Image 1 (cartoon, helix red, strand yellow):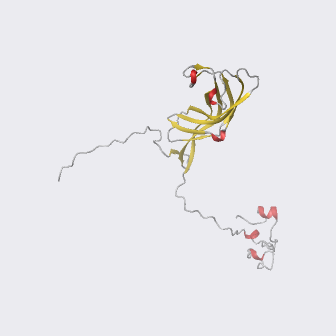
Image 2 (cartoon, rainbow, N blue to C red):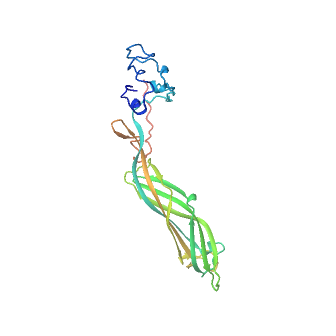
Image 3 (tube, one colour):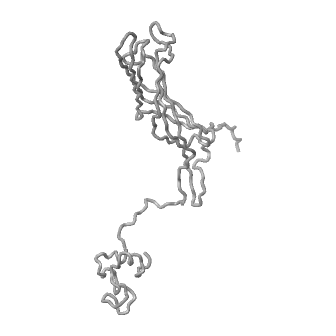
Length: 260
């Protein structure tokens, strides 16, 4: 623990647990006359023996197994980008409950995304990240039916599909993708979008009895790669062939060996 003289920081800041005589600066019953060596700290006047000898008795933590390498495994960041994703779909009036009558006037559309229920699938191609998923939403439409003066409402709970591909130079299929939770930047609804009728006299005909719903999402995509770092700062990839295009190994049946 270093020199425990009177100049020691423990001595100067907190005071010594033993007197000058206890430190061998004079005669004391605990020291021989003119002795320069202190007896066991257990005879010091302090009640805390460890303040004298600092012989802490806490057990030393033992490793389960000794390390056999001075290299470390870390995640190297290939790239990180803030990106936007667009979830959208067009819904005919008949998709809502109750069905919105054809020719109704749309007064208002409220779109409520459920971010907790997002389903997304992410894959890495060479130099590219592809993301496909579904965003659950609840759509409430306020409308005026033809000939009516009293507004009514209709509701639809469904999923908006989204897909996006993001350029990531240097990314390889065996890298790892981390995406931050989605945030909604805005939601939009456009009534009067053309749609092909599917029932009754309007089947197969293009009508304007539909609503386009769009939600803009924001997230941050980070691509990482495991690498080994040596004590000198040298870096090598855990899988040096991670960016190679996988191929089927060549197989061949050889001829029979001649007899001896």
